Length: 67
Figure (tube, rainbow, N blue to C red):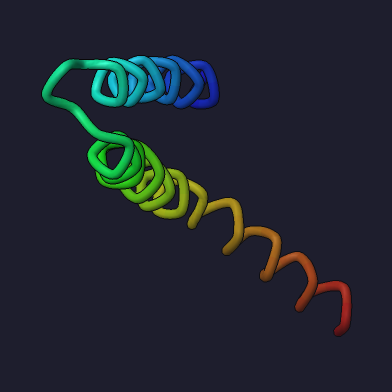
């Protein structure tokens, strides 16, 4: 479910970047920063934070397997 939202958000951000790049007052640099600041950084942070419980479970399982 989370990945559907992430894919949808990246689709919106890509469209925003394309509009920024092709707008009369837009620029490629502005499109790059739009993609980076609205898409990659926030989505990476959210996916990292929401994946924390899974990583903790995996680490705990590895520790139990060693003992």
